[in-house]
Image (cartoon, rainbow, N blue to C red; front, side, top):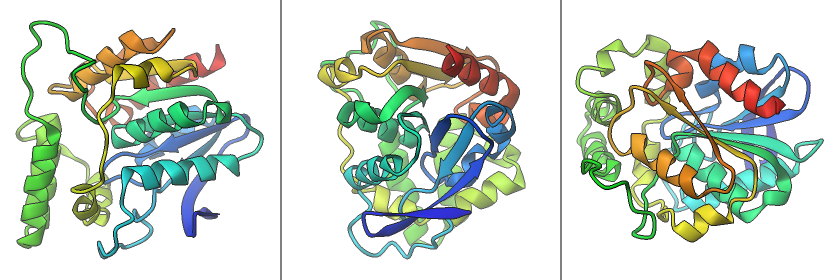
Length: 270
């Protein structure tokens, strides 16, 4: 584990492999361990740099303060990438980390060579309508609110199960490997910050502003809003490519690491 001083915070990261830099950003409840299952495949041709965002493991945050904001994490990632040499870098984000990577590409395209978004999280505003006939999906933000209530009531395990099964379906929590569960537990208190992180919805103008060559990836078995948003964004990001990882859900890189690694490596080699 190493760290860069970023906006007054020591931002931890892991670095594996040699070659052009690929910076990886985890999602909700993740940290630099999120990408363990694909470090091998991806580091064959890249120097993979997996970060832990502000207040995530290895920090054990007490949920005090008001700097758990989407804008802060985007600013931190920009400052981090500015220190990675040589630039520009390839940037990959998953879920909430995909939202952060999207905002970095929007604000500082000069820092990036290519962009990979694995089911980026967030909401679409009215300028990005979903295809006609798409089922209505309850927003994941409601799950976050419920999980926060459960944590405050002392039911941390229930809070994690509530959130995870809101994405992967009822009964999925019991199938999560022990190491992956521990990572989620280590970051559970970040839920308390996320409730007021001030994340803006994606707009048509936002999508059209992305000039970095972009790959959007979805899991073939993902359901709910996360299965829709990346497809809508792909339609409005100029030249965007898409890929589906068959028989995998939202954490597709854990469930199908070889297939995920091949898709990403192929795109980055083009």
